[in-house]
Image (cartoon, rainbow, N blue to C red; front, top):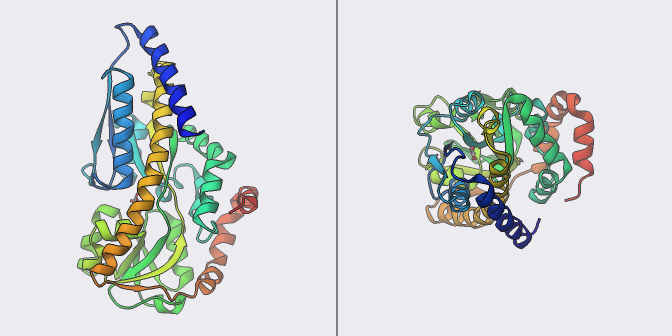
Amino acid sequence: MKLRTLSGAVAGLAAVCALSWGGTARALEIKSSDVHAMGYPTTEAIAYMGDLIETWTNGRHTVKIFHSMQLGGEKEALEQVQLGALEMTRVSVGVVGPIVDDFNAFNLPYVFRSIEHMHNVVDGEIGTELLNRLEKGELIGLGYMDAGARSFYNKNRAITSPKDLEGLKIRVMQNPIFVEMMGAMGGAGLPIAFNELYTAMQTGVVDGAENNPPSYSTQKHYEVAGYYSLTEHLIVPEIFVFSKRVWDTLEPLDQQLIRKAAALAVIKERELWRAMEDKSMEELAGLGIKINKDVDKQAFIEATAPVREKFGAKYKDLIARIEKVEG
Ligand code: BDP
């Protein structure tokens, strides 16, 4: 939906809500967690969503953000949301696969041909279908956010082809797919929570990790892993979810308002993301980080074919549909 149409729809909805709530509807402080600090596109988009919700409900509902890993890693955050102890969280789809496994179709290396391809998939019927399936994992899927493409960084050397990963221990997100992906590429994958990663690299538990430029830069991972090679092997979107347990206690009109605010937050994050990615690359270059663009992508695509075959077997139809989407 276009931004203006959406805003118009929201204004109407807010008016209806104001008439029908009277003084009795419950007030909720929506606690939302994120591993990133304020200023990052995801946290800022949730803050924006919070402002909208607060305005539209005349302050009856508010959003409080627990940023910068105050509540720990993403696996734990998702568990808290499933239990209803936390209302909302924004996480990488990377850690959602173990809960609703269809999401693993998005977690396969090189399954998306480009960012545009990923956008077309998550913005289309496949994206909606998967968001709806989160309900069976006690979650309400509110929307996707951008996270660009993930590439390798380490303290030893530039990565040009899979053979450069041999002997390197690389941290991956907590999902078996990524461990196998690393194995297929020639390295060793160690699943470690994001909040433990800096120390893990500093103390040599791992030699490096993989992530998008904004995460690499804002977490200052370059201080302990100064070679960044643009392999772009994963295009994993982010997702923000609401606790189904809490959701089910909300008035339908409140639910609609939250969904509208979420849709606007998605648009906001995408804008912020574009700017942040450019800014991060400039910052990294300015810091003298060794950015390697000379990557044999085809060799990485070929090396990871067995991972797509093995894990993709379960979602053959879904993957065939993803392939057909343009972009
Ligand atoms: C970042 C994501 C964040 C993940 C992190 C990771 O924004 O949600 O927790 O990667 O690698 O890009 O764990």
